[in-house]
Every structure is written in structure tokens, then in C-alpha cells.
Image: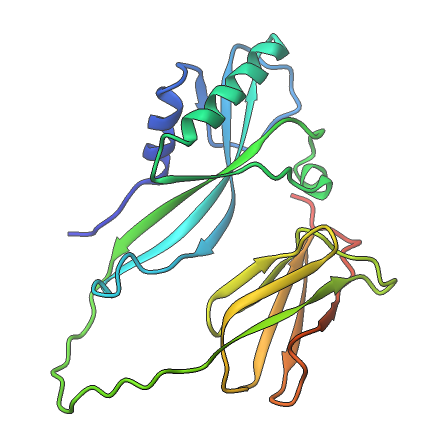
Length: 230
């Protein structure tokens, strides 16, 4: 039997612990609200660490939802959003991100910026794996770990905040700060060639690091001017 957690069931239970408002999983709308509703729009699907090293048969991803609220009285919508924020803190299976989304996201959604936050929920599923007998003693050799730091900027040398910087080989990522800077921990320290993938406002750029490249001040240039509109 599959080990699965339905993200919508978890999110619905969380909202219902606060309000009986209508729940929508569509993207936010600019239309005049009819009644009170909570919109939960799936923004991202991220890789997540396994539940336990002893359970390699269980895979896990994290879904990130944009949470907004609407009501005929704007004050009611704002109060509901605040109540939902505090309720997340009582839900150990949910994570909250209060950093405001970039303006480019609202432009892509076709709605004006509005109060919101993001909620992360883990989804787990079981998969069949082949179990082979151990024929030789296990030898554990510690591997050196290093860090990659750097900056993401435009061709005009302007910093690019909120960019996702990822090393697919090891499944680690970071989000750039307001100065465009990032830090990637848990990188193999054996100086193997690595590819860095940067995603910002609908654009993607790659940067390949060789064994001899300086990894303490990596500069990645991306032009995020043209966003992909939903």
C-alpha cells in the first residue's frame, strides 16, 4: 500500500481549523469577491530529504502554495489571513514563509499585489525497490564537504534577489538575498565538475564549474527582464 499524504486534505483541515470560508485551489483572481474565500495556489514543487535513511522506499517532495484571502469587507479578509498565519504555527506538518513574493509573480498571475504568505506541505509516496544481498563488508569513508558562495546579477551588474540557485547533482538549493548573494552548503569537496542552475522570474541560466574554478565568489549573470506570464 502506498504511503501517501494528500496535500489538499492537509491544507483543507488547516483552513477549517480557523474558518468555514470557501476554499479554492485556483490562482488568485482580480474579480470582486462574493463571500469569504481562501485561495491556495500551487507555486512550486521542490525536492525534499527522505523521511528516514532507513526507509529508502519512501520518496518525498515539498509543495509550496501561495495563500491569499478575499471577502466583501477587506478588513475581514485581512483578519482571516492573520488567523491562518498563526494557525500554521500549530501545524507541525506545515511550513510557513512570510517573505513577500516578487512583483513579477503578481504580474505573471495577472492580479495586483495583495497580502499573502506561502505554505509548504510534504507529500510522500512509497515505491518498490530491489533489495540485493550484501556480498562484501561495508566500508565507510568520510567525504569532504565544501560550500559554494557567490552572487547572481544582471548584465548591468544589478543584484537579482529571490533567484533560485541549485546544484542538481546533490539536490541542494538556495534563494538569493536582497543583495543577490547565495550560499550552497553540503557540496562535495572533491573538486568534481559541477553545474549550477539559476532560475529567476521565468528565466533560467546555467553555470558550469570546473575543478580549478574559485568556488568562494561565483558570479552568475542572468537577464530576468522577460518573465513568463501565466
